[in-house]
Amino acid sequence: MSHANDYLQRTLNILQQATILLTEDEQQRIEIATFGLPDYPVSGLQLLTYVNSPRYCAKELVLFPGQTCPEHLHPPFAGTPGKQETFRCRWGEVWLFVDDNSLAQSDGNMACRVPEGSEAWYTCTGYVLLRLGEQYTIAPNTRHWFQAGKSGAVVSEFSSESRDELDIFTDPRVNRLA
Image 1 (tube, rainbow, N blue to C red):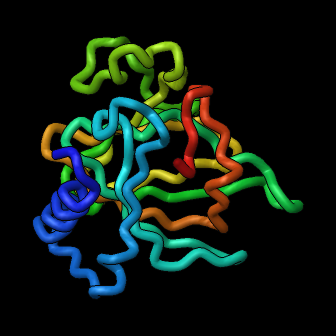
Image 2 (image 1 turned 120 degrees about the vertical axis):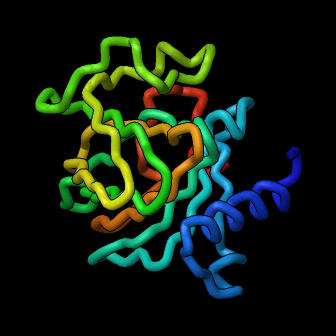
């Protein structure tokens, strides 16, 4: 698949498998996030923002099988501590790596793998494997990255205000708004 419409259709198929119904307007607002990286869809994310205001934000994140969202953090802005977000797995499974020493630590022998050639840009080793119905809250200004399991994943994100243009990525090649 090399065209945006193909990736959009693939995203809609996963949402249908997850029994998440979208309006026509919502389907048209799905964002294909390549992060400006050359290996999309290995690295990337498909998302729908339902609402984003100064008080709260709700999104649906869709990951293809084994797809990885690059490591990043949400820094403080406009007098806030940065975005706090809760990820709730709605379908499939997702490996969530967080700069959190209270989590299990990766020993390198896991089912998921950092995208080839990008190993230097993935530094978080604490992880949680989220399965259907499980959730984890990421503190503001905390590095994290995530990768879908072998079937892909749908994750509902509930957060404070999202300011994607302010996100700080570990990999200097990333352009979030590309």
